[in-house]
Each structure stands twice: as C-alpha cells, then as structure tokens.
Image (cartoon, rainbow, N blue to C red; front, side, top):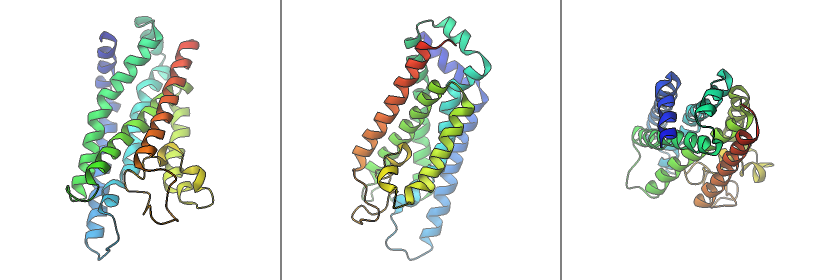
Length: 242
C-alpha cells in the first residue's frame, strides 16, 4: 500500500493530471451539448440519442490517454524512474502500484466524463439501453487508458507512445473504421471495440455497420488488448535497465 500511496502522491502533485482530466470533462460537456442541441432542433427520427451523448468521447478519450502515458512516460523522460525503482526495487510491485494509482484517478475520472457527456446531451436516463451504454462507455475509457499505460511502459517514451497512439485513435475512430473495404480488420483495433457498447457503431441490424461481435464481447476483447499491453510493459520494466 505504501507504494500505491507514493504513486498517488506523484500523480496528484503534477499539473498535467488536473489539466488532462479538466480537458476530458470540458470536451465531453461541449460535444454532448452541441450534438444534443443540433439533433433536438431537427426532426431526425432515426438518430440514436445515445450516439449524440457519447460520440464526443472519441475526442474526450485523448486527454485520458495522455494522462495514462505521462503517468509513466514522464518518469522515463526525466530520469526519475531511477529514483522510483530505487525506492521500490521489486519491479512487479512497482508496476502494480503504478497501475493501481492510475486506476485510482481513472475510475472516478472516467465516470465523471461519461456522466457529463450524458447530461450535457440531455439524453433520457430511462431510455432504451441507457444504463448498459453508460457502463460500457465508462469501461471503454478505463480500458483504453490502461492500454495506453501499458504501451507507454513498453516503449519507455511519452513522445513515442503518443506518436503511435494519437494517430491510431484519430485514424481508427474517424477514418479507417469507416472504410468498408478494411472494416473487417479495423473493427478489432482497440479504439473500435467499445463502439457497439456506446451506440457509436451504427444500427447493428444493418449489414453496412454490423460488427462481428456484440457490445460486451467487444469490451472483453479490449480488456485483452489492455492486459496484453500491461503484461508487455511489466516484462519491459522487469528486463530492462532504467
């Protein structure tokens, strides 16, 4: 527990933590309000209100990913990782403490981001599928951020990690995921696996948009991506010098 407390203090005392979470909340609120207002002003019968609530999370996830990457990548960039590993020489314990501390911020932070997006869009709390979509959106934000944390531990550089992850998230969500010729492959990219749960993938009874998995299977696959990244990061921390 002492190692977790130390990691929590690190995250709480750096300015980037407050900035990234504030940006995530602001983006989710702004996009939810704008999309909600736009579609309420039109007679669009076939628009899923949960789409308008959660589409902005495709952008709001970026600050959370940045937070996760900086939580470990900044220590490598500055050289403070040597001090951290000297204080906690058991590297498995260090990695577990880092994951626990990041989760300590991510779990409540992602809940706030999802709630703000939902309220800003003025989606109906009792609407069809609202509760599972809210849970799915929360799980997605947590898992995609843990995936980013593991990847940052693996590459040991915030610049490299963000240089790979940000194009992946933008191209996957906004570009490659909408190209029918390759969508059978891109649907399994980490950022795409939460779309069915969040009602962003389009009508699943329409062959043009249907995925090969359901909402919870998609999130389970994202969990595997996150687990693989964290295990790879743990192996990298264990085997390499700081």
